[in-house]
Image (cartoon, rainbow, N blue to C red; front, side, top):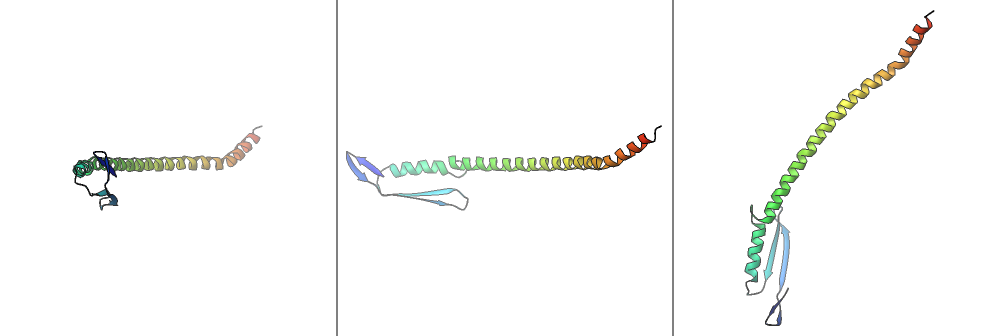
Amino acid sequence: MIGSISGVIIFIPLIVTACRSSSGMVVVVIIIAAGSGFVQNLSTSLNALIASGSGSLSLDAQGLSSTSQSLSQTISDLQDAFNTKQQNLFLVYSRVNATLQELPLLQQQLSQQLASIP
């Protein structure tokens, strides 16, 4: 990062490391060699973003978790409805199939009855 004081360019070493904590949240560590209020302002801003339970990222994560649970329940409900519909259609298919298999016999019986009419 480059800072400027009174027209003089000052190079400020900046190291940014991101790692995943056990809770799954991304933790960002920033080390800056500078004696300005930049570090405090940055720290305050980052803490506001990642504050447990009340930070923007935490609230977003909670919202995503809630959405994920809701979608999982919706998927489960749709799978149950699909399985029920599939079972009902299988029963209808079985009945139709049984009726179709009886048709040749019914046709033969009807033909015999019609042939016996004088």
